Image (cartoon, rainbow, N blue to C red; front, side, top):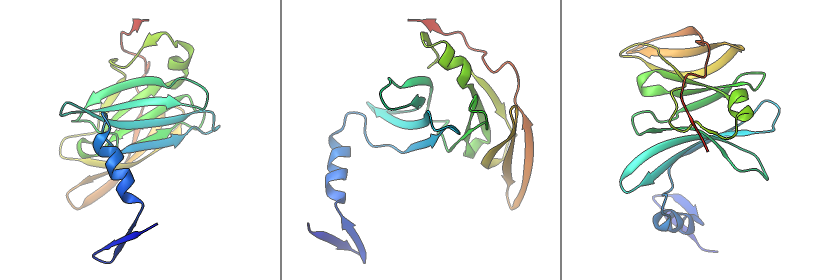
Length: 173
């Protein structure tokens, strides 16, 4: 196999991947994959591009099962981080550039497989104007810590997850 060298960087096998992205209908957007604490599920966030529009789709995957689509949102809210609660019952999805957290009740979604939650309103917490966020971690079943930044100032904030998490109105298939 040939290795291309451009500006001192070795590009082994990159051309087939780039070609696959170019001809793919959905494109090759970024993807997050975070396994659940027990390893039974993987939470994913996929960037999907169709006809010039970008959406982010958060779903649960596991081998041998159909993915469970949890929600999708437009390009204003990319998934920058995903964190699982220690009991695997809740997901926190962070959009860094607007300091926004979205919480998904995984236990509820798995217990109601025929309810389509892709367009639901899960609980959202806006952490404040002019902030960016990172490093979301669960510190309890209904609490997360998140690192916030405003200019040069950084600080940690503890966020209580509003309950109930399930607030949307889905459709039954």
